Structure formats: C-alpha cells, structure tokens
Image 1 (tube, rainbow, N blue to C red):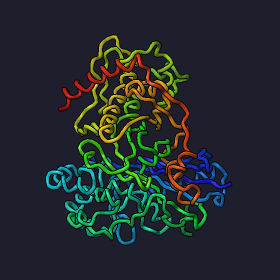
Image 2: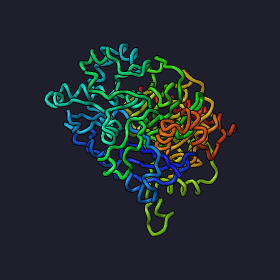
Image 3: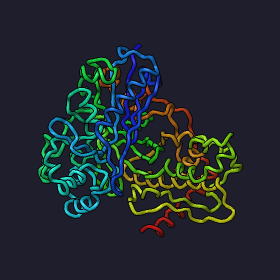
Image 4: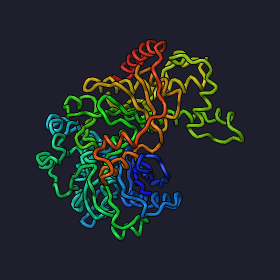
Length: 501
C-alpha cells in the first residue's frame, strides 16, 4: 500500500503524519524546537533546528508506524509563514531566524505605511506590519549592515527545509505572501517593489505552485531522514490555508476557524480585492487559482490555556491523585459541572486580548480584561465568558469577511474544536451552522492533499479535498439564544470601544 506524508512546520514544533490515499491518519509524530527571546519583543529560532525537527519527526514516525520508506509515494509541506532566515552563499545562517511574532521592526513598519502605504497595498494587497518578512529584513540592513552584507539568501522555514531535502531553492506564492514582496495579482515577486526596497530577486527562492514538485530527496537527506532517495517532495504552502483545506474549507462561502493558540478565520476568494487591506490580510492561496482573506484572534486557545493555568487548583479536585489536567480534560470536566446554560455568563465579559488584538481591529497595545465580575461569579463563569469572548472576536472577523465574500458555513478545527460547548456557543453567536472536521492534524493533511495532487493521484486540490477531508459533527444555531447573543455582542463591541479607541 502507498502512503502520503504530510509535514507541518509549526511555530513551536514539527508534525509528521502519514495518511492513506483517502486522507485517513495512519500515524503521527512530532518534534519540538526552541524559541529564544534575547530582548523584550524579540523572537529567534535557529534554521538548522527547523530541519532537525523535520528529521526527528520523520524518524519517530517511521519507527512508530513500521511503514517502510518504499511505501511512501510522496511528501508535502505546510509551514509557518513570515518568519525569515538570513543565509550566506553556502546556505548557512549568519543570524538567527526572526520569528513572525517578533516586534522589533515596529518603527520600520510604521514608516513604510506612512511613506508608501498606497504603493504597498496596490502591489501586495496588504499594509506593512512587524509580522511580515520585509520589515525585519530592513531592520537588519539598518542595524547590522555587516550581517546584512553577508546575507545572500532570505527564506522561510519551509523554504530552508526544502533546500536541505532537495538542494533546490524554491517556494510558493502562499508561503511568500507573508514576505510583503509579492505581487498579489501575478503571484510573483514584484520587481518594482524589490527595486524600491533595494533588494535583489536572486536573494529569494524561485516561485512555483503549491502542487508542483520542489525536487527529490538527495542521498544525504535520505541518510539523515530515513526517507527513500529520489522521493518526490511537493512544495506545499503556508500553514493557514493548508489547515483550511485540511479542514474541508476549499470553496467560496465556507470559512475555516482554526482554534489553536491563536484563532485564524479564513475564507477563499476567487479574485484579489484591495479593500481587504483596511481590516484584514489577503494572501495567495495554496489552491493555484485562488486567494484568501484572513482575520485573527491573537489569543483563542491561549485564552483557555491561560485560564486553566490560573484555575488548576479546581482541576485537582476533579482529577485523582492531584494530576494536572490537560486543557482538553480540564474543559471537559468543567463543562460537566456547568448545569443549566444561559448566554452571557451572568453579566461577565472576557476581552481575550492577552497578546494584543488581531484583525480586523488590530491593536498591539490592547490588554486582556474580565469586566463585570461580582461575588456570585464562579470559575465556570470565567470559562464560559472566555469562550464567549473568543466567539465575539470571531464574529468581528466574520463580519469583516462578509464585506468581501458570502459566508454560508463555518468549519472549525484545532484543539478548541473538541469542546462541544464552545462549538455550540460559536454557532449561537455567529448564527450559522458550524462543522468540526474529523482528525486533528489539519495542517499536515493539507500538505498531504497538495502532495496527492502533485503526485497525480488527484487532478485538483478541490477533487482531493472531496475525497480526503471529512466532517464529524454539526452544530446548528439555537434561535432562542441567537438574539441574546446578538445583544451581548453589541455590548461587547461598545465596551471594547470604550476601553480601546
């Protein structure tokens, strides 16, 4: 039997997953790598750690499943975008990779918007921000010219790993949309923008489609990973849209909501629309003929994890022998004791801005707040208010998306989607049906879907998605609660405007 290998290079770890040709998970393995924070607002990773994370995850996967390398027909990749590596002519790092969450280039991003916002939006469809690759590149040139002079190549984690595996320096438009150097219409690097920035196109990877072959596993990479030599490696794409197609959101009108550490709210666009830049991000999609727009809740699952850590003492009462529960176990136990449910947490609101506020009303200075606390509120009110607060933020993203695209259905994935209560709350707040997808590893599945198309198993991403993705539960909005949540949402927005104008 032949299998597809999907590899998801995340912000904190690599996940390697084997799938059969119909998308069923055969085995999963992961490998973490560190992020250092040498100064406040800085975030560094070592490029070699990205590759060694892939090596470790693949080796663990092969050992765990017993699948032979010869049984793997091809591999595809998903990777976190906007993180940037600085490499010399030998592809060796001259400086740690600057992670997308790094904010040191805030002044440069602000200056770009002040001096050339219209130019940037016309070409890239986006405004400058610290989580794009361009501002950190310019920061390096301005603050460390000697390091910048040694830098021959700029690339993302996925680009670096592809080079290590195949010897080819290639990328895709989805991945490079986060560079703020891509012409959103042509899905190629913009020569006028590069010239204005004083950058050379030969410092950047050659762009191909996400379903194209990047190259083949070299003999050296085969020794290091355990994969067979000459295994086809499909380029793959960015983590957000890979997860979206893995969740089954591959058609206009279907929005994917990924409830991981952050909440990513994403939908397919059939054509680019520059108006999106006023509130959302717009990128090239891994579906070759598509684009997508995206909003973000910067602390979604993070909000629940933060609360669990604060309230772990209550978890000890529920779990035997003082065992500290996982977030999923903790939520499940709390849900079981909630009793009768009513919207609004008895007047308690949570503004989950623990890491600032994301699109569509971006504000890096916003702070997390519980508002309306009284002596009658319990830990379960805090949990429900946190779920509702994230739901209201998702609704803000959905409303912004609806200015450019119809929204007919929601597909939720990520760790938060395992909570039945949270999914029902989101359906009630959004007043739309919410599906959850079967299987946990959506980014890796999206990478495997792209690999299946690149290998000729399916003729298009859409055809592969129809076969390889599935939904397991559907949550319908409860009309008796929808009106209450609409009124609560208006209160949430009014209070948010009062706190952060």
